[in-house]
Structure formats: structure tokens, C-alpha cells
Amino acid sequence: MPSVVGLLEQHELAARRRVDELREEADRVQAELATAEQEWQEWVIARRRVDTVLAPDGGNTAEAEAAADPQNADAPPTARDAAKPKTQVPVWRQGLAWSVLSVDYQRILKALADRGRLGQGPLTCQEMAAAFGMDVVPTRVEALRSKAKRLVARGWLAEPAPGRFMLARGVAGPGGGS
Image (cartoon, rainbow, N blue to C red; front, side, top):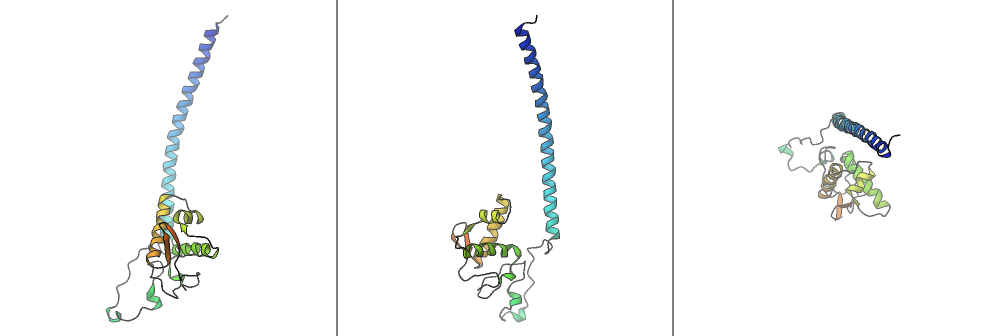
């Protein structure tokens, strides 16, 4: 009859072998996971690049402005000259329509106008990202912050507290700027 210690040693040895097999399998799965994650990231980047290229503005959101005509330098700016959609954020003035802004800027203004209509306070960029269904990651939040700061600098938004944005006084619904 086998001894109890001998049986325990056999079970211990079998368990040790099983642990070693599982560790080897876990190492293999970890390596495969790392490879799959890298491949997935490459596809995400590729999709973003394709989205940029296929965007309505051709992915060119920072087009250079055409040189001004020196003969008309003293002429008052017309509505056409006020802002070229998707190229710049014009300084806000009474009666300037939201349509002069790109869709991204209009989206920010709409979210803040909705908050104002509901009597809610200013929004942070993280809250905006979440409201827009974006991943709340630093790159997305900073992109929104950059746009919001540009809108503040041009008079479309106010920043009553650091990092919190609301519509500037006088800026109203999406139909117009007054």
C-alpha cells in the first residue's frame, strides 16, 4: 500500500506540472494579446487617417487665407469676407451667424446653448467630450479645450472659471449670433 506522503508528493508533482503548463499558456496568450492590441491600434490609426482624408473639407482644416487685395484694404469687410467656413474662427459681432463656424465649433456652441437654456452652469471640456460621445482621453479633451479657448479669444464663449466654458453674453441660438 502506498504511503500517504508518497500520494501527496504525486499530487503535488501533478499540480506543479499543471501550474507550469498554465503559466506557459498564459505567457503565450499574453504575447498574442500584445500583438493583437498593436494590430488593433494600427487599424484605429488607419481608420482615423481615412476619415481625415474623406472629411468634407478634405482633412484640411488649417488652410491658409488668400492674400488680401491691397486696393480694397480700407473697404469694410463683407459677410463673405468675415470668415471662410472651416478655415478660421472670426471675432464675434452682433448678427454674425453660427454657420460661419465649422461643424465642430457649432457643436460646442450648441451644447453650451442647450445648457444655458436649461439654466445649467458652464461645462468643462471633459463633460463636453462625454456629452459628445467621445472617449474622455487627454487627446480628445485637449482638442476640445483648444477649440473652446479659441472661441473664448474670439468672443463666442466666456470662461467664468478656469476650464469652465459658457456662451458669451450676447451670443444666442444657432440661427444667429445675436
